[in-house]
Image 1 (tube, rainbow, N blue to C red):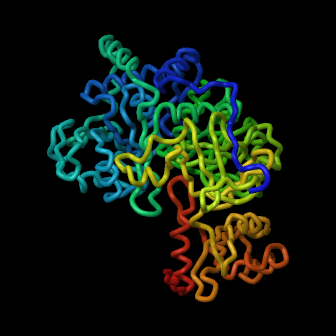
Image 2: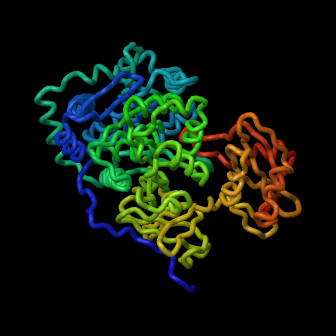
Image 3: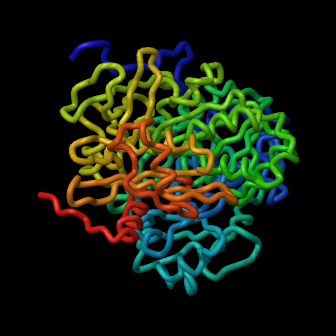
Amino acid sequence: MTGVPSYVQGAASVPLIGETIGAQFDRIATRFADRDALIVRHQNVRWTYGELARRVDDLAVALCGLGLVPGDRIGIWSQNCAEWVLTQFATAKAGLVLVNINPAYRRTELEFALKKVGCRALILSPSFKASDYLSILREVAPEVATSPPGKLRAAALPELEFVIRLGTAKTPGTLNFDDLLAKAGADGLASLARLSETLQFDDAVNIQFTSGTTGAPKGATLTHHNILNNGYFIGEAMRFTEDDRLCIPVPLYHCFGMVLGNLACVTHGAAMVFPGEGFEARAVLETVEAERCTALHGVPTMFIAALDDPEFERFDLSTLRTGIMAGSPCPVEVMKRVVERMHMREVTIAYGMTETSPVSFQSSVDDPVDRRVSTVGRVQPHLEVKIVDEKGRVVPRGDKGELLTRGYSVMLGYWNDADRTVEAIDAARWMHTGDLATIDGEGYCNIVGRLKDMVIRGGENIYPREVEEFLYRHPKIRDVQCVGVPDPKFGEELCACVVLRPGVEADPEEIREFCRGQIAHYKVPRYVRFVDGFPMTVTGKIRKFVLRKQMTDELGLVEQKTA
């Protein structure tokens, strides 16, 4: 190997936080007791840190009163709401392991998640959008309807005892969340204080299921130390203070909401502001204006939707300063529009994965704009990253390879899944991300694609992200994703799936002609398909394997057999 190796570490003068989430929360809530902590517009909730802390303690005492003990798993299956935030901090204070359940899950996925980690309790919303959560739960565990509340004995879910429903209505077999918020007595609070002294920051506090795009979902097990420190340093990168007000339209069940959102705020005394149960562009614009938000989080598709709102110009977004665009590759052209039109001149890009709590790289508010629009920034404090080739050897700066992360942020492992844990985390505790990246001479990282997304056309490696970034320059293209589709001659060919801007028309040849002479001939998409949108996860990540299957079927192609 020649040149400087692609290895970076995040030196820091600020030490890691060596305490539990509950201890840190109490410290912040005392310091900023009279400042806004939680604003949930669709529920008319507006609590100071002092008020939030009292409710968190009441809920933590009630959960302990049910007989739940440190280490027990408690699931939450709900859209964004105040109760979700209360549960996040109350479970941490009670030593429970919060299990985030995707709001899009259906019967089979719910049953798998609850059984995999052995949840003793489940907090659920009655319904959200087209999902009737109570009905789905009864399909899995019909015994709910006839069991006394708190005494469930379900054949399919033998470890589940407590079902706690949100909302004011009563449902047979369930406890009511609001009833658990009764004011805690002095004895209960004293008991909670004693319990908190026994908890350790390396204890598991959260299980998040990865998307399961290849096989069954895996339960990434995260500690207080993992996510508390990640939230803190994410906030530091945005230069958060108690004066900041963060609009959080991303889902709480995902790290983006509960870590980049809630924990970044709580570690700095900033306000958490939720515009709705789920993402709606108009609600975000209204909330930023009404609440004078200084920061906004979102995946690229969310920012695109806000910018394209027909009434965008009437909203005063001048209070915005920073925020994070992450969750999927951030198109350069979209980033530039966010900086210029949404006043987010200090917007940052973050990169990571659930298994690393999640952020490994983040740009800084004072990074040059060209760096912020073309990279994911530099390594976070206290973390190490290296880029390796297919043989595990560190590559020179600027060369492509797989990104590996090591440090405080790496998960304990996948819950009850030693084999898949060993596949992901090697003997030296490096987390293998599966992402292809480069690191330049100044330490800035560029994500060039997924190992599994890379298209190999006749021996030439094509990184879809590269072609997508070029196509975003076309004035008629609003959004684009490129996937490999089977080809009998070359093995794979590139297919560009294009979403056009409203009111314009284009044909495939026009798009291909735009590419010719500008990018290598083998990167010019053989196929161009015009689509209305892309298959996505709830968090806005493109499900490229689904898109590939759709395009393969639509084009009448046949998967090539491999040895």
